Amino acid sequence: MTEYLAELFTWVKANPGAAATIGAAIIAVCGVILSAFSAFVTGRRSVYISSVTAERSKWIEKLRSNIAELLQVCAAINNDRQCSKSYDDKRNKADGLIALISLQLNPADKDGIDKNLIAHLKILVEATEKPGAEFRKEEKKFVRHSQFMLKEEWEKVKTEARGWIAKLWDNVQGKKCARKCTYKRFVREELSWVEKEK
Image (tube, rainbow, N blue to C red; front, side):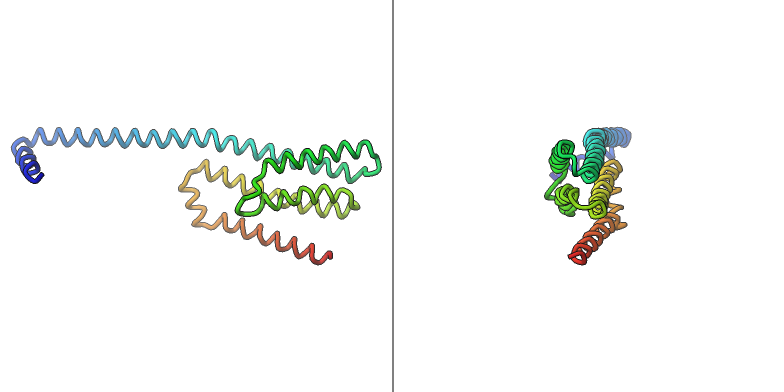
């Protein structure tokens, strides 16, 4: 191996013009390889952003719409509990929306927001049987859980679209941690309200 290197150095000294041409060719080949790699990574990222992020945005909008529809149906149930035919139809609609929203959520999410929201779906519908003020209290809790969950999902979309550097920067700034702490504080306050009511 050292013999080949010695011969190469001897040839370079003897032919400085050819060595410069070969060096330029090597640099050009490295540039082409780096450029192709960069295009590949950028292309994959664009496909990811355009497909996954776009689908997540659609999912968030559909989930928001389903939550709003469930709230509307539950309010209608609470307002006219006396009319049995109308009540049954609305209750069936509410049950269908509970199933649909539950399927759109992740019961194993590590932050616990989805899990809490799934639990509150049933509580909300059961609260339709209570007087208006008690129902409105449960409705407010449900809306607040929904807001936390939708905000967290929207932040995921923004981070995915901006890339891994933005995700790293958000972690350095502690934005996700701050949102998580705010949610945990809300859940603790909610539990303390439940304890006071007992």
